[in-house]
Length: 524
Ligand SMILES: [Zn+2]
Image (tube, rainbow, N blue to C red; front, side, top):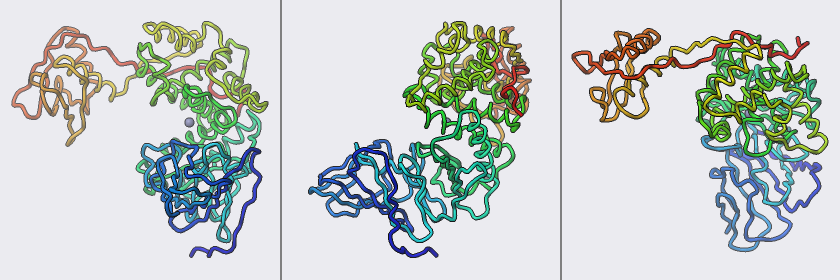
């Protein structure tokens, strides 16, 4: 049973100096939160400061006031109105989530309530045993709910969880949070505000897992569909890495602040520092760190290839993380080996963070590049000629004592062979799916005997799914001799012959076999 609403616990907490102009009183209900606005002047329109918040789950209960995507509009001048906040019904395509359930309480993205040009002053009318935290500035996620869900971790950080007995997932997240906080506090100094991690099983989905971090110092992690008790070891180690990554952002995005437009810098920074931190405290070893970097390097190469619009490419999608991590790694090795900085790229971040403490919070790519020499691999990658990007980079990697072998996965060999087969028969990219244990290709009408939807039984006698490496090798050899490829389709009586007139190149997949230690020197 919920406690009754016993009296008003008005939290008159200090807020930053500036014009107030707006007070919002939160009153929780079983289905959401009622937000009562009181403005310092009457108006027929109040614009929200955060235009990118999705408020489609909200409603207004004040007569003659309506809610548009980014405004509250009234038919008459008013200084009071009431908005019913309901938990977001979906996280799909949304940025910071306005309202999420956590047990009986809620995680609220407080800036979603803020009026344009005003500083949000929050008050709360709470049931007994409830609290509103963290304050004093409501500039990110806040928790409104029973204080019984709030605990302190080993480092003094706040943990909020909806479960009475923690799942393996939340235990892993909280434990890593404390370890990452200890590592980065030692490296970068303390955070200005108490860090908070909240974990809820009641995320709106449809993604099974999502998390983010806001200026209020709260990392919010949301599971959907009760998966957190059914995670295997590999999923738990991904959660560990995620917790390390998000904790890094408390310093590199919410203390020091990245300028707009180069997400690869702070995301790559968080991703790589998570790796350095995990290796330095012994959570992963050098082999595991190199496996992670091998994948990043391969994926970055596939994303960039010899494209010339590199800055645009590394600022969207997975390339933000893949290439961002590679850039940090290259800078780290160069600074440690040639730049007289035993702590490598960590020393760059330490400087940016201490500059932020002195009031100069903004940083951008120039701050990293200024630390590196003109022959730097980072400069070669970002500013060098596109056609020789990867051969130039490989030369620098060798100089930095990095060694590797090419070890494409079975999946990438299969994709390369099928793409080549398709190019020999027709135009367009390859699109295929797995159906009843076989590969089904969706081809256009200009593909000769491969036109339309076809099911591949074998190529050169090899099942593409179970013998992809043998299939790849056979296709490569026959194409080198300009011989036709023998393809067996489920729907046809006989094997068909597809002439091959171009060499099939082996895909590149870096498997790093040697590199300087990722862990900080002198670390455990
Ligand atoms: Zn991130």
